[in-house]
Length: 429
Image (cartoon, rainbow, N blue to C red; front, side):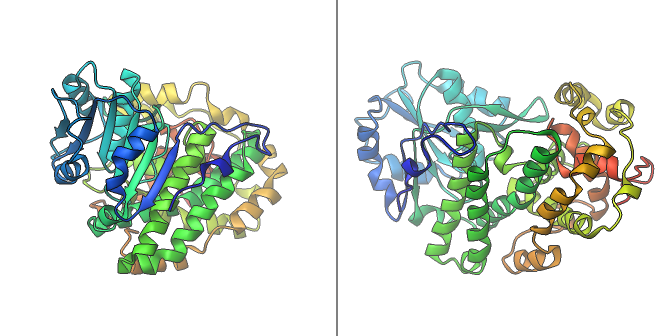
């Protein structure tokens, strides 16, 4: 399967010409053998270095076998220790420290952590890279943004899109199912991300692209339909999942940031990754997204049917600096920076009332929370905090605090005006 990138190029109905720098995307059995020819077609420099971790080292060695004439003789492979590995300043530093100055390009052999680390390192060195996903676990393979933890704070920073993605079904379809389930959850999280984006467009006129939103919705619908096959390990369903993940990454590449694919559900996942009010969890990114999604959908469903929004809507009380300083501690300066200027100033009870009909229409398109949770449970996807080592009581305060890790307007931001928040009691949703 070859992704037809040209169908997404050109002037869009939103008025933008969306940039796509990736040249080829291939999802096929035996795709690893295509790497030498792909590198030649792309005109990649002769010497390259592969980056992997201990878990994907064997796969990397298989992929680059027979390419001795193309590998950098000084450092053909950089292997990062898998224990406690995160896409952070330490991982990037280790790659940059070992990278020969005359390396021509990089090959990322791994899933989300390796991909983000290589993307950032390649951006720093001004090098092209090819992504070789070893698991259908995240949607970032085609993205231009890096989900990084920098000095303990979860940030999304710019990188470069890969020159190409080469996804071998013989490899990613055999990854541990936990990684696959994480990827499916990451895609399903677009339900809330897309609703949040469209709501922000209604309320504050934030730029929005219906075409890109439709790409994301296609990815979500295809994965939801394929859940039974994904659980069964059916190769065609696995390829559908990988295609959806790559399509989501392409949407981010086209838009120039993660807005089409990430909002409330990712804010909560990132909030938990920071360990602000929770212990550090070893849960995968998509596992946290799945739990956050299932914690949010009942709220979205409830607001869709709420008869009297006016009695729940209050004027904005201002940026809760004292509370956030207490909760985020040493990370508070990053929170303050992310909220300067305060995006909530643009919102008002009157503005919400004026767009109530449109917001209700968006929320009416959301899936029923109980039904989707049942489908996710059957597919072995995490849906409850306790499944990722967190107390179930963490969801209420997370709904209030998590939106402050980003500047984006989301439904949770809107709910700061639609609920009578009492810090000592948590959110009253």
